[in-house]
Length: 518
Image (cartoon, rainbow, N blue to C red; front, side):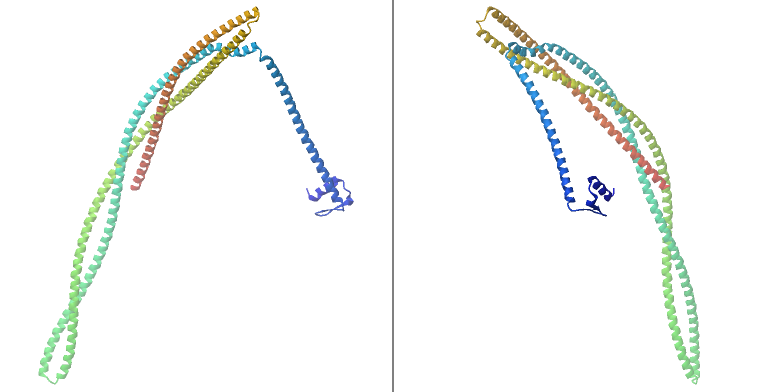
């Protein structure tokens, strides 16, 4: 709702004169004194509300106090009536005798209670005998289960040993296979390296052969050029001789011949120098030829060795491939054996599951026996509680007996004090004494019977308790034995499951490696 509209409704509810106020956009404006009047009315309303609330609270508290006083008054009246009645009865002799004798009336019911307890003990013994028979049957079944479990354990142990042997053989074959694969890979790498070296040596051989051929061609050219130079040398020598002869014949041409001789000497020196260089080159080429021929022979020998190694590696590779095929065949055989073992293990698992189900049934029957045993224990506890109540009742009866004896002594004293009563009172006193004597004898007889019955019950209950404790101990021992057997069977089941998982994993790993090898 809009604030302005709400303000208008509040002002209309106050019944104010419209001339006393004006409503603006966000405020309301009053004339002088109007606001004080509104505050005074507000205080009056608040004071009325507070006064009414206080009056209501005071009325509620007053009503509560009134009801409380009424209850107290009724309680006081009841207490006064009870006290007056008690004061009237407390000194009355028959009332005092009634209060002393009334608790002893319950003693006659002990025989019925004892008979009920004997019936309960008989029922408990019958139940205990049934439980013992069931326990004997369970022990027989347990022995059968233990023998079956031992047979299964022996069979499982044999199967496990076979499986372990197969697994060890498979592991050995896998390791051998890996070693052979590594050897094959190494041999293949060596073959590749040897082939590369062989190819490089062939290339070097070809290069050296081409180089030798070039050197031989150069050597032949140098040899031909040397022979030409030798021929030219011989020609020049003959020519020099002719020129010398002609020089001796003709001195005129001496100058020309000297010049020609000088030129020829220079030419001869150059030719001799060239011949020396060519001879040095031929020697160097001969050395290179010898060196390259020796390196070629070494390379040929090395190539022959590499070829022999290659043949050897090929032979080793073929032998390893044959071993690998044999390994694959053995691995397939082991896989077949492993499948057979897995089938046998599955059968043994089924037998084990049946044995475990039987164990569960035995455990359920054992739980029923335990429940029955707990019921017997609860019954034994109830019997012990009843025995304790009987003991308390006996103590209470003895206490009442002592109180009656004290009361009797008090009555005797009173009778001795009142010897001056009339003959009727004396007869009444004698009757009372006889009645009291009879009550005393009956109380003594009942107390003796009660003691003998309690002693018999104590012996019976003691024997029953001992037998029940022995049966409880036997049942607990049987329970612990069955629990240990169950835990052992569960542990063996877990171990067998783990072994089967390991075998399956090893089988998958061998399959994966076999696929990789293929």
